[in-house]
Image (cartoon, rainbow, N blue to C red; front, side, top):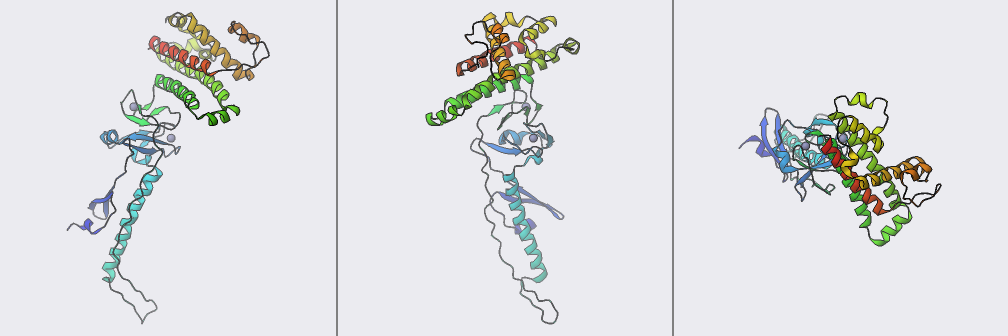
Length: 339
Ligand SMILES: [Zn+2]
Ligand SMILES: [Zn+2]
C-alpha cells in the first residue's frame, strides 16, 4: 500500500503523490451552474469569473490579467477567499492526520504515563473522519463576455478594461461595452416594479441616470476617437499639439480627421444624425459645467429647443436612448474610418 493512502480525505480532496517530505494534494474547485469559477485579484481584491473548461485548456504557466486594474500575475495567485478556505480545510485535515500518525509512531498508540519524572503523558490514537469541505457559493455571473482577441469567456461585476487572458482590451471593445452597459442600466431601471420605480424616481435616480448617460456617451466617444486617431495617424502628436481636449468637441474632431487625410465624419453619418450628436454634446456641456442651466451657447447649438436662457434642462429616457444609438453609430464610423 502506498504511503499516502493512509490518509482519509474529504470528497474533493485527494493526495496524489509524495516526493520525499512533500505531499501533493489536489483539491477540486466546484464550478457554478454555468461552468464558471471565480478569480480574485490579489491587488484590488475584486472578483471576476472564467469558464472552467476553457481555463483548463490554457497553459500551466499562464499569467492572468485582472479585468479591472490590469494586475498581471501567475494564475494561482487569483484564488478567491472561498477557494482558499476550501483548500486550507483540506490541508488542515491532512496536517491533523500527519501529526496524529507521528504520535502513533512515537507512542505506539498506547496510553502511557510516567510516575517517576515530573511529566506524565497519555495518548490514545483516534480515527480521523474529515468533515465535508466547504462548498463554493460566490456571486453568480450576469452576462458572459467573449474576448474578440482570444475567444475566452469571462464575466465581470463592474467596469473593466482587460481580458483576463490577453490583457488590455482594444479601445473599440471598451467603447461598445460601455455603451451597452448604459443601455442595460436604462433597461434595468425601466424593468423595476412600479413602487420601487416610484421611490427611486422621487429620489432623482432616473434623472441622475439620464444625465450620467449623456456624460458617459461623450466620454466614451472621446476615449475611442483619441485612441484610434493616435494609432492610425503617424504624425498625430504634432497635429494634436496645443489642441486641448479636441476629441470632446465634435466639429473640431471632424475637421482634425479631415486634416489627417480621412473622410468627413459629418458626411459619413448624415446631417440629421450629426445635428442630434451636436445637441447631445451641448446637453452634456450644460450639465457638466452649469448644472443643466440653459445658456446662449446652448441655444445656438440647439436652435430647435423651446428652452429659455436660465431654465434648467429636463432630460428624458427617449433622449438618452437616441443619444446612445447615435453614439454607437459614431463609434462604428470612427472604427471603420480610422482602422
Ligand atoms: Zn485587480
Ligand atoms: Zn482575450
